Image 1 (tube, rainbow, N blue to C red):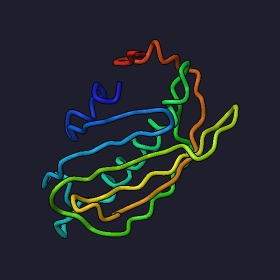
Image 2: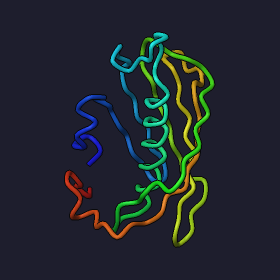
Image 3: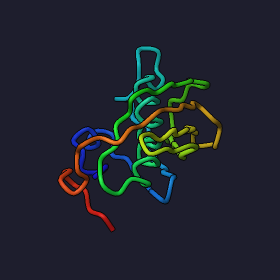
Image 4: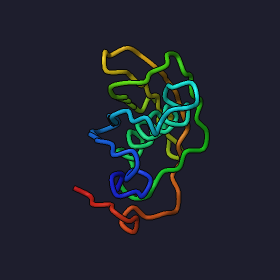
Length: 134
């Protein structure tokens, strides 16, 4: 499902998902840069949100979850190598998931972190393009 999303044709990420956890990586391209020659904050957000989202959705088997809020902290600029983000669910109730994620550079230095709230939608996973329950 993640890899078939049209936006990911641009980012070309790799993803691994397990129960309550997701890890995503992308190779940095100059197309990700802002005017000062480092990765734009929107890329950090995408990496953090995607990892936290899939950590949450790994625990929901019926419907697509939605991000309702997400806080991002950018801690270090990066312009070469790759970005790897790791998300994990830290709390869940019947109606929502709270997940945290941390992004790392190629040297395993933390470059950003975030946390978000995700809720169950009414969108069936079985009807979501690219979804394939295994």
